[in-house]
Image 1 (cartoon, helix red, strand yellow):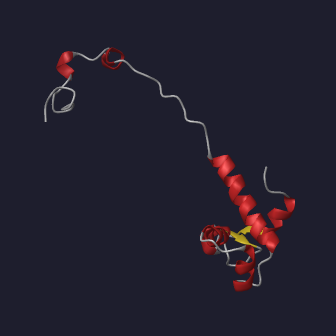
Image 2 (cartoon, rainbow, N blue to C red):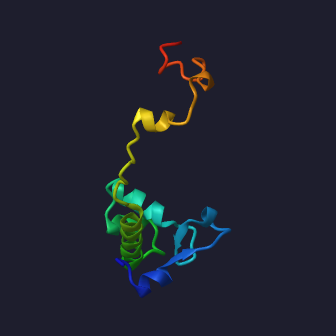
Image 3 (cartoon, helix red, strand yellow):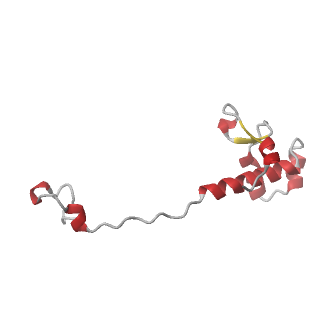
Length: 109
């Protein structure tokens, strides 16, 4: 886990506030807001100047929360099972196939 117990006190989620998005200490400033400001090139100092209710720890907690979420969201790609056409068609009688059901496979339009 990338974010610690202190961060859990900073990042709060309330169903009725900001659509249940993670916010900073119960305020209406979301972790996403902070990430957007940082991505737009604002420095910690600029963010705190514009929003004096925020602290450097709040900004760090938003970054840690986002990093932890990203870490848990990324999964290795799953291998797809490969099927042969014969396996897919096994047990199907030719009279059950209609060209309008499979236009690409049967050369139809």
